[in-house]
Length: 421
Ligand code: MN
Ligand code: MN
Image (cartoon, rainbow, N blue to C red; front, side, top):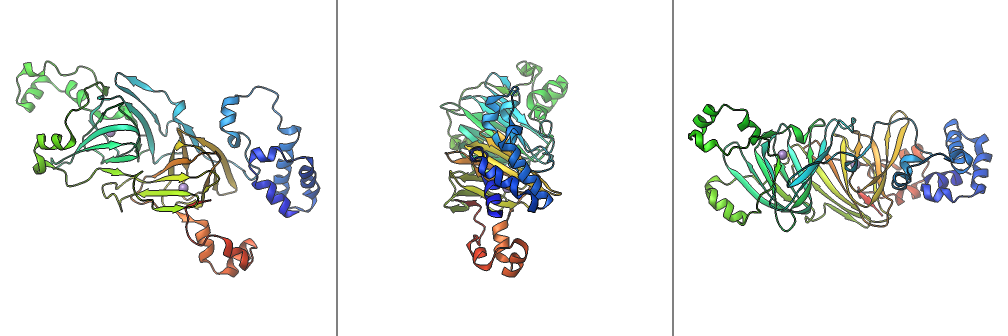
């Protein structure tokens, strides 16, 4: 009877719908011999299959279709959990001539105190105005091409081009720029290790000029007052421009060549790097201060899970996880004491959150590759694999805890595979 129970519990919700009255009857018949928790679980399962789960009133069918587990959780879910989900498609776009921006921060996802994210579009030639801010900036290019610049406090300058799958890092307080390149500009995700960060709260060159007395500007620049006539009177923020005709090398030569060149690299090719781990189930590419030394405060993994595959049961011992879903469909369950588990679905353009040290998995529930980013406000990517842990323990200890015999334990992957088939 226990086998039947377990089987029903691990079925996906779509599969569970088709389990007939026989398993319901079996579950009901078994109630007498079960623990209180197992009784609750069996009772929930029974309720899901009978009239109890009918919903004769209104439903948002489009939302339900994308979020079946969020709405009707598996019976293993229990208790309460901090918010785990939000979507960029629910936050307003600030549209300006040349592009747009919108953000998922602690304001809309209050559990995410360590990380905030921004999604931005720049058409070809358009600028994100010269600026700087209080948090480090980590960015992943989702589409197209861009040119970025950042100056070190010692006056040395980095200029680089990025394309889809590349990333950049700008340290807090370092002045920088982003410009969309041809043929169709760019779209990218920005990640900041500060939950309350806002793209609307950055230090803009145009605003500083507008709030500084004219006689101070002329003295600072060594210019006549007439030279200041064309200074912008409003914030530029995002504005159109012409795509540069210079190559990066020509730009570098124009500003002084090697003499003023940054000794630090601020861009990184993430998507095209050799996978950190490749298995039958997918691939993981880790980028942190070990392979990208300028990324001191953000660590990340680009994860690809093939259809039917799963990011294994694991947790992160040092930091909360902020996820961005790039493609495909997923469900994740997060476990947190005491007795709390919450399952939610994730689709492209959604954000996921996992509290520090909370156990979780991410399962590909679609029929295409699931692609997502795991980001952490940390210098290192660290995770602990449940399988790995169980296989490093003396056999007797695992048997005493989980009831698996020695032969069964040997079937569990011994190494940290990250993504399972
Ligand atoms: Mn910035
Ligand atoms: Mn994780």
